[in-house]
Length: 126
Image (tube, rainbow, N blue to C red; front, side, top):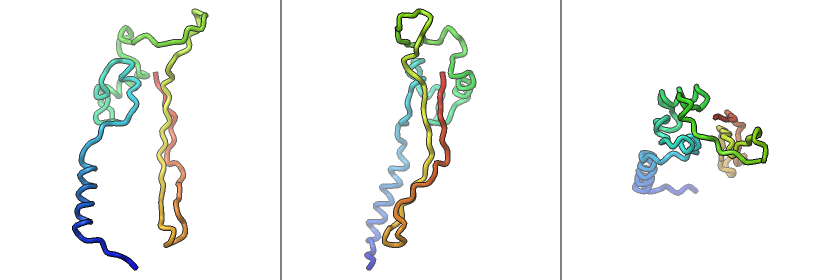
């Protein structure tokens, strides 16, 4: 037997969800390049993950500044050999776009379906 929700409950729930979606959140990105170059993320992004023209140029240059003198020194491990420099931080990321479908098990008996990744990217720079 189905129970009907009161119209006021549906309207309030819908209003809360729409308000939550309308209020922008801070980006949950990893600001590795912003920390390295001591710049704001908004120098290259507006809004994240979309790039501004400067961000596109920065990415096209291999995530390096236009002027080589602006490049900060890389933090390396001292291994005793002056010719060997091991970088402390590896700018590496993985991006997956997945899909999950949850069905009511009582209706069709299928339960949760985890789809194949639509996209898998291994990202590195710098």
